[in-house]
Amino acid sequence: MHLLTFAAAIAAALILPVAAHAADAPVQVTLDAAKSGAVIDRNIFGQFAEHLGSGIYGGIWVGKDSTIPNTRGIRKDVVAALKALKVPNVRWPGGCFADQYNWRRGIGPDRRPGVGEPNSFGTDEFMDFAQQIGTDAYISVNLGSSTAQDAAEWLEYMTAPADDALGAERAKNGHPEPYKVAILGLGNESWGCGGSMSPDFYVSEMKRFSQFVRNYNAVQPMKRVAVGEGGGEPSYNDAVMKAWKGRSGGWDIEGLSLHFYATGGWPPHLPSAGFDEKDYAALVKDPIAMDGVIKTYSAIMDKYDPEKKVALAVDEWGAWLAPSPGSNPGALVQQNTQRDAVLAALSINVFARHADRVRMANIAQMINVLQAMILTDKDKMVLTPTYHVFHMYVPFQDATFVPLTFDAGTYATNGITLPRVDAIAARDKAGKIWIAVTNIDPKSPVTFSVSLAGVKATKASGQTLSAPKVDSVNTFDASNIVAPKAVSAKVTGAKLTITVAPASVTVLGLE
Ligand code: AHR
Picture 1 (cartoon, rainbow, N blue to C red):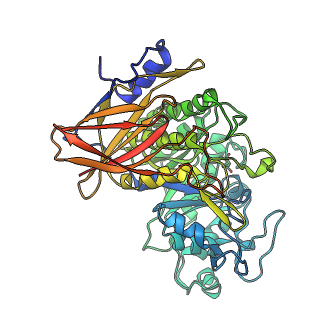
Picture 2: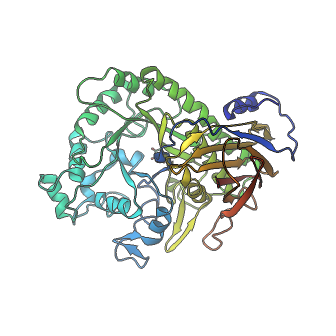
Picture 3: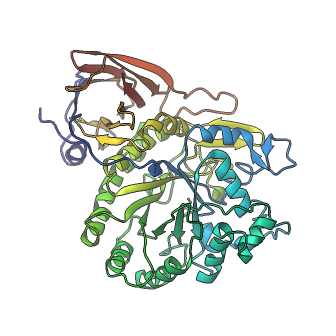
């Protein structure tokens, strides 16, 4: 049998009739330790926290007077859980919300509520939250309904020294030291909720925002991310990159955004729990399709930026499913199952394979909204299967991609054909090699036989995440239905052999 790359296997899986795959035939994987790819930027493990539903209010912010344990109004349980993920950056305050946000109503002692927005969690509270969980701030400014001057003043408030007028206002509000803003978003979905702008109109606006919305805190260099297309025709990407190539004057960007949601069809209709195998496969195929979208957009960027100076920032991704029964549809509440765990692993693997161009990504969203890490209900909190995948993948942050070759085989159900397995590997800064394997097939276990020629290792150990059913969830009362278990494997004759459960994600470090 030919050894195919994962991408080739996807193509084959989508075109060819289904080939039977013997249940007990091990998947032969070859690790090419002599070769290395790009660094998997830790920022691809970024998160997104929007003022939407209970993503902020209830999920992060409970207020200083709450009976829920908090530090200056921010939930202690949530902070402890997020710290363990080593979250590299959090994108805030939106999303679509960002293009209607008035930052001035959310600072100082005199908060001015808007409709459905108390503004009690504003800039200083977000920066406190970022500091508590140890993450970088990715601030999305309002390019849709405000001015470049207003956004410039917001950045001045955050980053200028305390002897500047707005820096002094920040100091009066309790923070004399300038904040660090690592990433600046220049609008959000400006082709849609961010102002329905044509590509050319957006480019003109974006250039002014890029030039005048300055970072005054030299300790923290700031990257700027322009809006790119959201999965439709890529005219924004072309317009922004063409302008970037011909740029003159004082503007620049370091990133171009892509939003890609796994939905199994629009509008979101797949149930987030209580689904069957058909709905499992219907959703899991989307991260595989994302590989193609990234290739298309990368090719456009390559035309203007062959040196890959501008990163593709997939700053909204994840599963967008039917709202949980009985919930407010606008709050985007959905359950999180083992299917989400498989989807998260496959998506991260796609980003890792494109690590030379994809250097940022933000899962939507962090808490209580869409494919969340954490669900809360008043004082209760539960970690989702997606949380566990992010935790297991921590060793891949800033590790160097190491190529694997394997025949992904096929898994087919209800007219949908997918690769049967996926796998990536990387070498961390200490030289340790990590391998992540995903068994997409929800019915059969899979044995991986990994050839490790040239690598000194006697065993591998790590964690595996599987579940009784693909739609198993963790609940507030039964929070460990889907939880990682320790796993180890022997290396014999330069071969690592491990059998993993159906629909599972496993991460192993070679020792
Ligand atoms: O994540 C939910 C919404 O999806 C965001 O506000 C918007 O940017 C996207 O359309």
